[in-house]
Image (cartoon, rainbow, N blue to C red; front, side, top):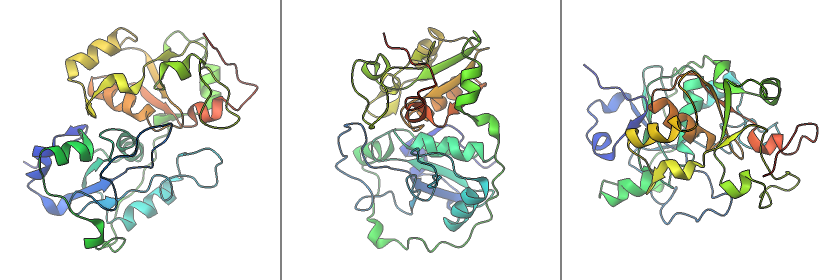
Length: 285
């Protein structure tokens, strides 16, 4: 029976993964944002061997949209995934250079396109290096020259919500918006890093900083995560994850699904959109 991974995989299991032909490793790192410290080791100087570059800022975003990191069309996503040599039956493992930051965004995007066999490397590149597993420089790899894959994108719109959906459900007690930004940003106590974006949060939103779900770049044990979520939401709630630009919201989505929650979506525009739309209400407290 072939092993498949759909949420997390440890470095030890990845290093021993048996079917290398179906395995595709993606580096989904993005440059530091919001004052985050630049990692010591990152693409292209340090990679997990055979890793391919999942360029979230360029190849896997809608560049015609003024908002950062928004979802591209299914056709565009499919084309870019095929260029990376990804097939319908590929087991994808995605990581980033921070531990867990942007890898969850790539995970959520593939899931929204109907691909289930994708998991996040718990702890990412830092934990991989800490355990002494093999590394390579991307300069030693043949990049952008993979055999064209047969990946097929089947976009499922339920994975994302837009501002109209959220505004229309502001008074729905069963709909919970969880905001992954730091508490000072959520409360409007500091200026937003993006020019022209108001401070504060969506009315009735709940703050769950993504950093509270991590320790040393790894997700907390499932029991601890379940305890955190249970203090905020119920299993029957509709959960919309939001953040600054739709990236760290996906860490919340990963953790929630890992804990057994099923009715989850991500606000793609997140605060980058809500904060600039003056017709949308903002709360500071």
